[in-house]
Length: 89
Image 1 (spheres, rainbow, N blue to C red):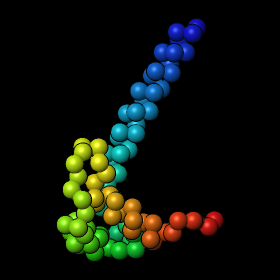
Image 2 (image 1 turned 90 degrees about the vertical axis):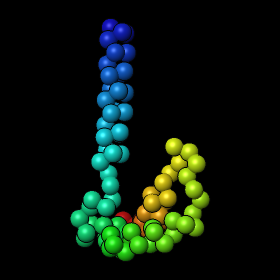
Image 3 (image 1 turned 180 degrees about the vertical axis):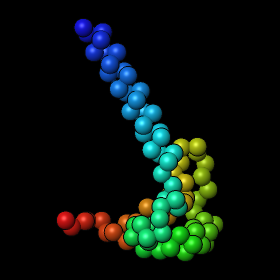
Image 4 (image 1 turned 120 degrees about the vertical axis):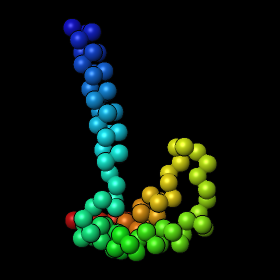
């Protein structure tokens, strides 16, 4: 019985890792509908791409494979500025 629980738990962990990887790979903010993108970032996709191109030379170069890409850093900052740190609700 104990081995069965361990086996089920390991299967759940594997499934969870696969699901997280799939979700991470599927999430590309530029694939969102334009209205949803503007709702999240308060800029159009084209304006955001232009901003990223403008800021990229001023950001540090990614040295590690695990480093957060500059594009994602900029999108996170835009979302923070658009939504604020404390959401009321």
